[in-house]
Image (cartoon, rainbow, N blue to C red; front, top):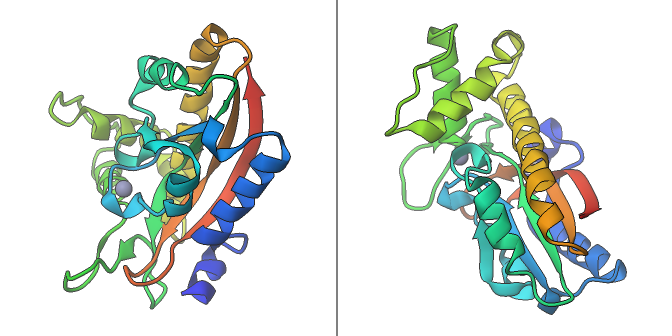
Length: 230
Ligand SMILES: [Zn+2]
């Protein structure tokens, strides 16, 4: 699996390595687990729950969930303000974010083998469905109140329709564009929310989560690690 992941994502590291590296870095930079609360903006897919070491080390019973399908931060400014109001006194905050992509043992992108399920299933299902939509509808789709998150995903990817559909691996390029959309939205949300929380430092940990067969370790291609402060 390692070779397959590294073929597509040469800088990706195993999820356990990523978490240990990030945690050690945060500690060297003045943070500690008991006083650092964390949030995620990851896809709703259960397969994205690979951050067991963070769950063990960081404050709180688990992360504050900012994300919806694809990983876009649908909790918005209100959700971000709620999260920031939970930061331990004198402590810090970490936000882990990004889209995810499956890869099979045979090297097929956008698919994954799940526990006790025959064959492969799509991963990320939301990005794959959005790709199907932009292939058919050049002008995007109507907003559907019963599927509003997916409408936003399609809107973001449709803005890069030509590049995505012309790529050798459309799902890989769509995942890259999704990462940029998630990061830009988070930055805009933080621009609005953070000024209300003077002195709080937030570390952004963003990248692409690479899901492998259910009995193999997942990988993470880290693209952003930086602190911001109000
Ligand atoms: Zn997904």
